[in-house]
Amino acid sequence: MKSSINLHIDEVEALEEESLRKKYKPDDVRRIKDFKANKTIHEHFMKEALVQARKAAKNGDVPIGCVIVMDGEIIARSYNKRNKLKSALEHAEIICIRKACKKLEDWRLDNATMYVTLEPCQMCAGAIIQSRISEVYIGAMSGKAGCVGSVVDLLHVGKFNHAPFTIRGLLEDRCSEVLSDFFDKLRLEKGTK
Ligand SMILES: [Zn+2]
Image (tube, rainbow, N blue to C red; front, side, top):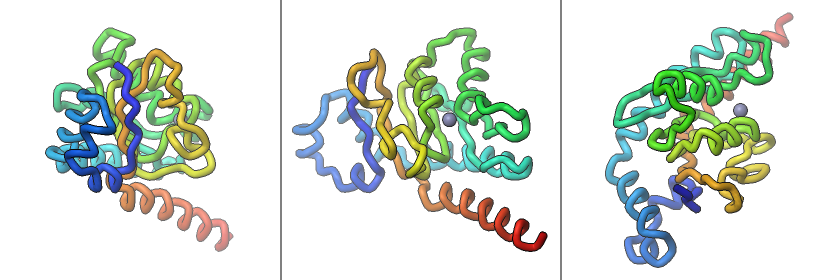
């Protein structure tokens, strides 16, 4: 299913019933309403992604965490392991997609929802399209590298066969904080050496 939705949570909150119906397809309207009605559940899953992000920091990896949910249950969770595994490919989202596919024994994740603490890069946005993840919830934005609205919005260029329903800014402050804490600590350590 293709969705044109890539909205910041503040935009979602500001949407009135009437403008919702005028602007968007019925399926997107249903999903926006569903999001608004179940915000605490979505926040719960983003908090789980944050738990993962903190694990990455312990290994000296940039704290980015991800979970994939299906039918209300987490089917995969992971965090950035680029430094730990010495591989540019081991981003939280990629590891999570791999785990979810293994668990479902299917490369298609079209009924799955991803929660990720930082805006995905071009590689992960590509993997999201390839695995046909249905919904993506993003915490903080990544101004210089993010490919879901910052540098480019790969998920919604409109020409691919798949485009997930996307909401940005879910628990944005907490997701940013875990990153800034990590970089503050890093600077402090460098300064004392
Ligand atoms: Zn990535």
